[in-house]
Amino acid sequence: MSKTAKIGVVILAAGGSSRLGRPKQLVKFKGKPLLQHTLDLVEKLDFKKKILVLGSNEDLILYEVDIKNFEVVQNPEWEKGMAGSIKIGLQELTRDTEMEHILLLLSDQPLLTTEYIQRMSMAHVYQKPMATYSKYGSEMGVPAIFSKSAFPFLEKLKGDQGAKKLTMNADFVYRTIEFEQGGFDIDTEADIEKLKGLE
Image (tube, rainbow, N blue to C red; front, side, top):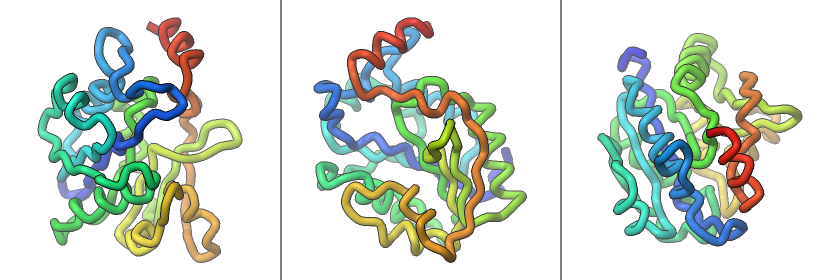
């Protein structure tokens, strides 16, 4: 992937994993933390800038993972929801005034692949919607990538609103790409048991 695409990536990993009761970012899969898997996938691709947003359990996470070439930023108000992390990541990326796209990833989608990230990103760059979301079943969400024209919409998100909220705007033009495995994430101990079966 060429840097000329001017894509910045933000991994949203600030949450407190309240349903699980321990940091989902550090749940082990194939011998390493889930967050490490996501960091390693992104590291294989040629993104212009890479941001990791942390909040809850920041010190423990930084002790357990190798952040590679990511810039770490903190969301001190992580308890208020994902919108704050999205906006902090966007603010850091757009310090580079040439940034044209922002790719949002989570730390708890163990079936994500480098190939999917690349396919989604390049499809977005060539087709030029305001946003491209992943679609899994009847749901859609992250990974998701946004063009510069969508940045003002992202900046208006509040509280626990994720970027999917933007699709409710009539003038927000987006498309989706099928990611069948994207619906599997880690929220409960039952999810972790399923995860062990995939190793």
